[in-house]
Image 1 (spheres, rainbow, N blue to C red):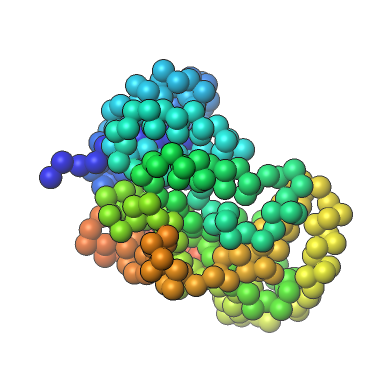
Image 2 (cartoon, rainbow, N blue to C red; image 1 turned 45 degrees about the horizontal axis):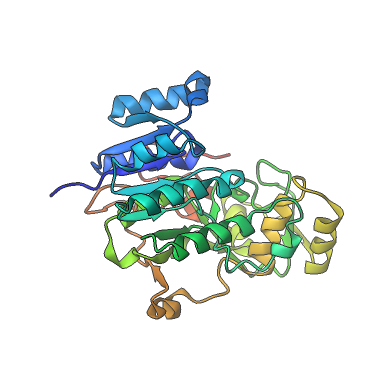
Length: 330
């Protein structure tokens, strides 16, 4: 069977690199659109060499260069964009090219995060402008009638989880820990490699076409209280809990400017307002707007998908079934 040809935009980024690797692993003919400047950057050029050695086709171009976009899009069936949040609106020219050519079977824009249409903190962004551009791009894709899938994966594990959701810290505390709100509201943390696997699996799945794909495996949904209990079990010690109310956290957010307050804004969104989990996915799926991959075994590898998604417990305990000896984040 002929494999879907995939173009990755943003392949030198953290998620984009995983997407490119996974696309190749699943035997898709894979292309990456790369800016000239990336080839002179030591870190990015090393990534590009690794991808090239693995079989990816590197194409020079950018989101600002219409000619390069046309040439790249003509080569593939699916376009996946994984650029940074600050580049979200730069996808507009790409969308125009996809619309004009009319040959793309699916476009996955750079949304990866919590569903921007569900966020209840937009009025607090004050300079970060994280959600509004994503909503604008989503509406544009839908208005143009472009076949699409939007990926809602919420937090990457490298964001906040290494510190157990303690702003400004890089590792978990061992004496006192701050709990925001009552500590029972749940957030979702996903490993980037798992997000990449779900995304690449979605490109040929008709159930995900023109849908929002929510990634919410049970083992990746945790409250602050649950995370603290996991950590206490690991270190064999009870921590003193310091509680910060919603009002106190709001005051701190408003008293600080971006980028110093972005971690607190994300905490407020996920663990106070419940933006990751306040809505029910399964009941939404019947409205032809959403689809949810329930099976957590659809994970990090090729079919028959014998591996599993890296859970929050795995992360805290440094366990990775795919890595000999595990993965010790702390």
